[in-house]
Length: 304
Image (cartoon, rainbow, N blue to C red; front, top):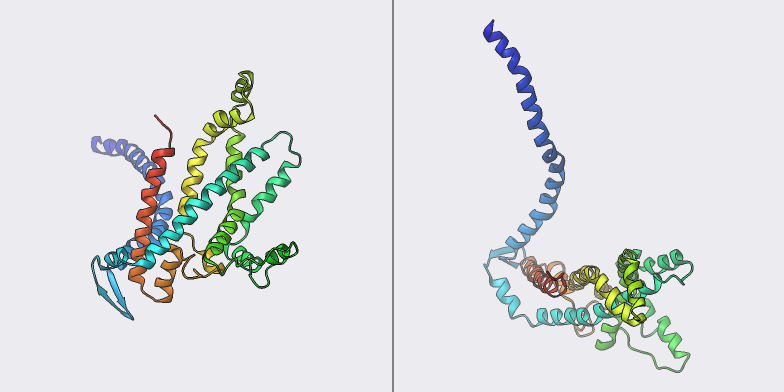
């Protein structure tokens, strides 16, 4: 009888322990599908790409080459040319785009503006346009022979501009396309931050005699600092991965003047089928993005 009563008493305790263990395991079971999908579609391709970068591709034959692809990369003038082209777009187009986005956000936040919702939607609409679609659109508009832009400026006696056939103008064309597509998107991000800034700060600055520029400089810009960091990092990553626009509009030309790292990676991987070298380019690009990200967080992040 004593043993039986002990077993009966132990059963509730065992069930309670099992329930506690089940409750501890439940969160892991819920996130397991997401972890499995992340491992299959993210971690595995990343690891396989690194392994592939250690092989030399000769037709259908792959030979282990160690760091040979990375050594080739360091001495490849076309890679450095593509990196230079990408850097020019990053250093010129991104600051212009973000400056326009901040100005646009300040204007959209004005209490004097009417039909705010409609206007905001109009500036955000380019963002929902597909990358290939708007790249083709700009290629048609800026066509040196039959483009609408050259036709319009020709009405004022301005000679046709070789938008896509001259090295300088081709870079400007891509910069214009990127600015049109992403300025409204960044402006919406800045606007959301502006609407959360306390009005008391502006009132205090006005009482102290600060004008519009002083309020913008000493109140608005410091308040936008976290969002500026976000947009700078996102724009840097996006620009360094730039592919669709130069590929569709100029195919990296003329004379490789718009050959970005993304286009060069694509050409090596899918045109020349040199997947080992393309993987090495991808990892070099990832390292560059990581280094720039650390630098940006160091100089634009919050000060302790």
